[in-house]
Image (cartoon, rainbow, N blue to C red; front, side):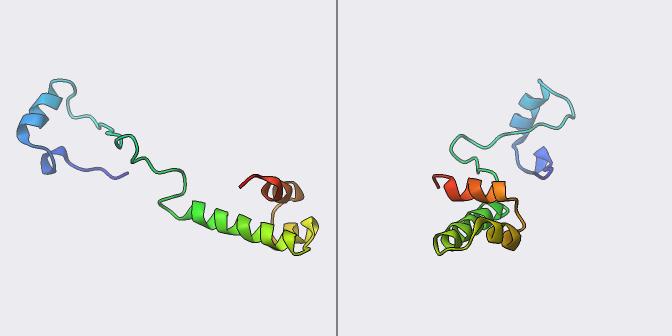
Length: 88
């Protein structure tokens, strides 16, 4: 989230109305409902993890052991099991 000067985006009448409630502070304006992105969607982290988990499941289905997957992906055996046995 970056700082934007209100004078550069709002009409003067709106700024004067907002100033009735706060003076010189920083205000957070949330996105409208339905436009909120889930964790990792903007950065690509979610896609990376989904792709990695898919690859783990595929390798397990072809006979790669949990211990081998653990070493290959630098994850604990417990984490590999959670990925393999999850519904997704």
